[in-house]
Image (spheres, rainbow, N blue to C red):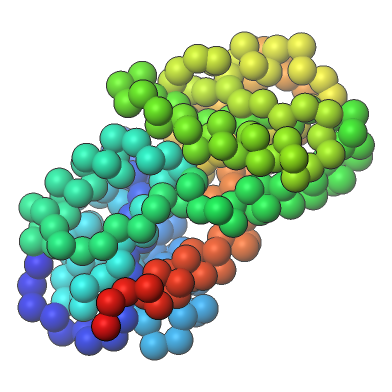
Length: 242
């Protein structure tokens, strides 16, 4: 990493992005960083995806020991292995990585609000309605579904939905299996960005299952997310040793 040219507290929000079409998600991360920075006076906040060529390295340039905020839903291969390796190669191996977005203890309350608002907008009574979280999952990183199932358990206690369950794009239970014969119901994507899986795989799986309920926007697009990230960053810097 180049020498520090910006002495202010700093953070870098990192997401996977879309390797086949990196530009839209790179723009989305930069826009998110702007909204987070608006809530953190005196900070420099940048955003980058791993998929966009040299974006991570460019975003790190000149920052003062930035906190790394993984805008991922799971604590999986990307957060445990790929991101630390990329940071090391960029000369930022000693930077502090926070917990992934999907593991934030405040997130279940936001999921609850988004789901209940979605049910109200669709005219669905939560007590009669199933809530389905559509998540990524992984075949190669066992345990990466832990944040999804933790969210399911919290939502079962936080909300009055008839049932709360999950289905996955890349592991069992498959989303189309989880969605089959689920009615009345609504689906909330447990994703940070509106990229390929949310745009293509999730709707296709729901269609294959004959799922007739509303498909809500991914939780990462919720208007409260910038505030959630800002709060996590502010708490993290307060805990840093002097």
